[in-house]
Length: 273
Image 1 (cartoon, rainbow, N blue to C red):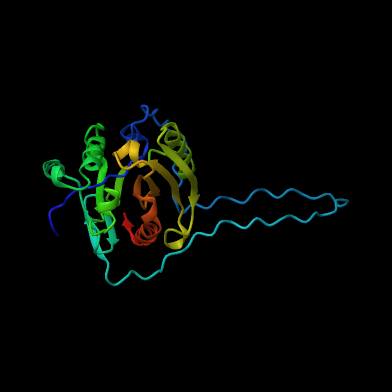
Image 2 (image 1 turned 60 degrees about the horizontal axis):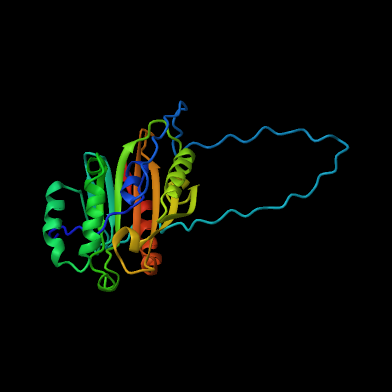
């Protein structure tokens, strides 16, 4: 693998990092007393209500749930593997992506090389967001970048995904979605498109938190006016529901459909102990 040239970091990852999006300081996440609900939990059916004998049953309209495309259950043969043994994390990805752990050395090397990069303005802005947020670097488990992208010259932004591992602290996926969506809405340059708990993105139909959002590339990264950056964040429990893995994908809106398909397959096949 060639030397890591860090050219993009997702904004709007979690409440911890929302301050990096040029928004107001986030409020602390309350620690709920409820026991964490692992992704395998199934809600109990509601108690049936008896129907009086004289009542005439009325037909009920059927609401079709939004279908979540299920990735191919077989891992593509040409994908490669990133492993973080300390976190118990294994991520499979296409060979076109460079995936690595963040280190101080990698960040320092990037600052030195930013001057000659076509995406230098966004690189400096993104790196400051990461390095100026107390404790952020220690939370990152993985960084992925699509360097071999012919649109970089035009957009001056490198598509990327990031992964954070944080304690679950009793937070349910429903509560996570609600809290993070509310914090994202505070940031003027960031808009939430959807926020929900979904099944079908993981083997066995395990639930994940899913948030889709868009960002103003001009305000956040110094890109051309009208450049929209799309993002998709997925949070899921480890096997004991003690930790959350938070993966966020960002890319220029025009490129996002193809990035989304890759990310969907990555999420389905990742292993998080």
